[in-house]
Image 1 (cartoon, helix red, strand yellow):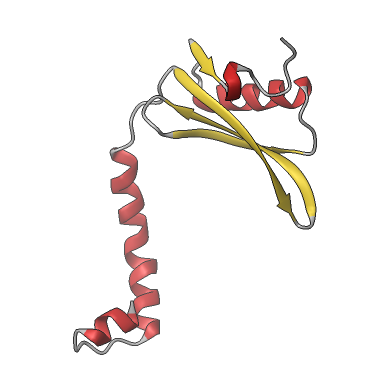
Image 2: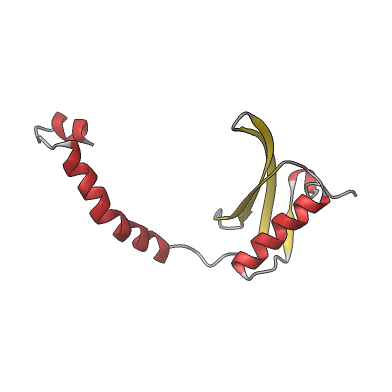
Length: 113
């Protein structure tokens, strides 16, 4: 930010920018929160394999029909227990039970079909 303003002829110290962030970030967060959709009841679930701290983990993610991230869950395993824990956590947090869940290949991670 300091460099962007300098390009426009405005000299600002990085400490001033830091103070602006401390002062205005809560207001931006509150404004963004007001614009969030109500969480939808149609969830798209996916998972990927990521390295965290040198260890491979499964990252589960649920997104509603509006594209809003509902929840994420990091697990050492990709099994039924991990999938149940992920959904339980997401439902507890949102207080919404999805009417439709679409997963990768239309299959829920860790569930046998």
